[in-house]
Image (cartoon, rainbow, N blue to C red; front, side):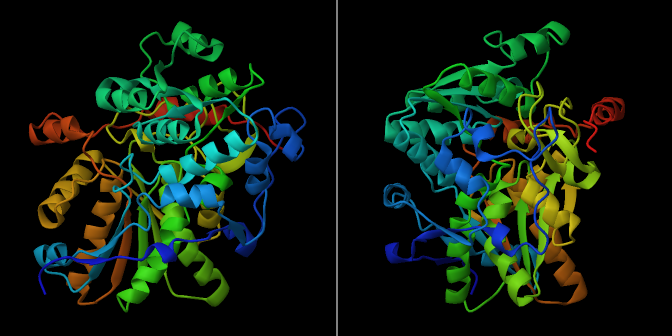
Length: 453
């Protein structure tokens, strides 16, 4: 059979619960610390930033958390999402590997991000919040929260990392279509933004800076909360609908993954596809390899130490233990803007430190080459972020060919690249180059890590 095969679930198969991997960790997560006292923080410490229902999910160790019906009702617009067997790609690669991909690009925002945006907007609305501030890198998260805000009647204010703001004007238009405001970060509308601009007037921005601006705006008004699109436990929790659906679809295919692959910036799409399978590995000893793929220009998992750090540049957030490049590190302006974060999700960092996740990194040109190869075979143009997972999957499939082994490879195609065609145009015109981070800037950022006793 040469054509791709699509595995579709019924509406009745839409998950009723999110899966919380915190219940199955062999060792508990290191605590989140107050930056002043360096003592573990409690729910009340986070109340100025997040609604309490979200905070309780952040600290929960319950294995399952029920998905509210209004959230499931919104999910039904595009979920369950399809799983494909990439037979045309297998044929192109002449590999005995069995390649599967979960496609999240069918959501209204074109990525996996609405899985948590819808949930966070619902909980904020339920607690009387009128306005949500946030940051976005490539724009997929900002687009998703703008969409969710329109569903629940919330005002959304987005600080978009400046390099992506300039690269992707249609993402701004998308957000504004749904009623959100979108500001290039660093901006002159916040003290944290102005502080960056005073020192670096031509700053291209970073997710750490944009987070500082969004948090600063949130804490100034009682009717406003902040929402994060990745990194935190509750965000990764909401994404597990992806992996739960994939488990049912792999059963339909009569197969089970030997390797689960996803790109990582903050870690939400990787966690979404991987954590339900990871739970089976931890609980039942299933023999699955998990590969987290990041950009070589922002190599958080592969180069960053596992240490306590701030989640933002202005140090407005608590201290969390994670793989980090330092909160002041500003990555080069490569096109996978959603992967330009200095830190990694604490859960993913913890599981990597425990040996459950194998990280690797690639340069952007080889990822774009892999994305075009995939598009020619499967007919879907991936987002630049997703191309990292595509590249790793192709490499694993080639390894199967060279070794003569047949393994099942599952990856999360977390979004389409329809807003990223200029990047593809630049690649095809030879204008896209591999960018390296400045080792001296990285050393300076790491030297500023907080000292935690």
